[in-house]
Length: 344
Image (cartoon, rainbow, N blue to C red; front, side, top):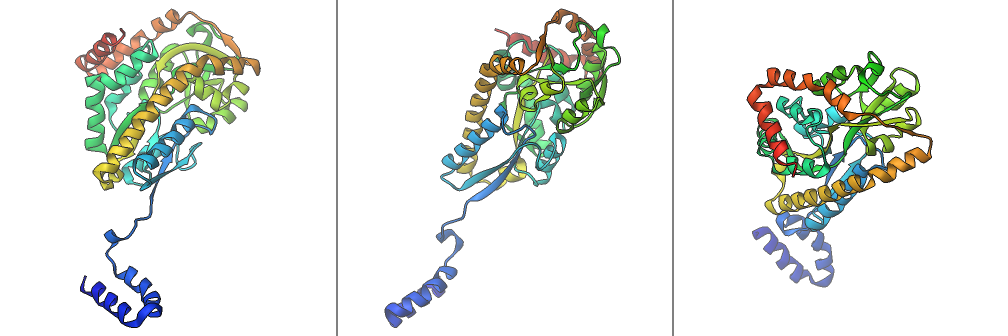
């Protein structure tokens, strides 16, 4: 402070010309808190394409973060896995190489194994039940808190992707029709178990490699929510859409705990508010667009293959018993009971 006062006295003594000369020096001498801070840019990575609902929600999130932090924080979005695939993006959150990421709940399971159970087949029957499960279930909230406390990944809100179904080159009506057929799969114990129970020979690969693998005949098809099938254009190479809706597959949005702890309480509040609002948008965007984008895919040559879901439910019953053995009967039954109670 004494140095600043000395500079001001020199400026008055030198007059107008000297004031201009010394102004820059005085500015350098001022403490950082006295000067306007430049906006902080935080990186947000996801693996969907620019035309999907995920990108729209990310753009809204970025806009709201800048608004609610009064310009102190800007969010730079990287789509199509430009910085990392789903698995690597969560690893980067832990290391602080990324600030935000959004991906399927199953991608978080390597960091907290019990989160695999959120991908149990037919655990959820409707969007509304799924929203309540992720927002209100004590089981889910307890495990999300464990993720932040022990793994450095903090869930801010849950965005929507929808219910997983199949897009394949040829139709099928029962597990018998697909026995031993190769299908692209995500590297996750629960998904590999349930696909195996249905009869698929699962081939693990990132979603960003699936289109080419189907096109080249490495696999017969893949399974994803309708919005992802549309945005990734899987219907072009695997045009038969079989709507089994076997897993509810939302996409929790997370922040690196390292990033979070650097934010002021006011900026944490602004980021949290933006996350909740973008979640609400994402949910309505996906739910309301399912029929529209399904019709668009059909108009471009895709075919809807109708099957009896009960046949597939029956085929996947052993997955529940395996989960009870692997995770504990009490753990699985508690989650199932909470999910059932939220069906209203």
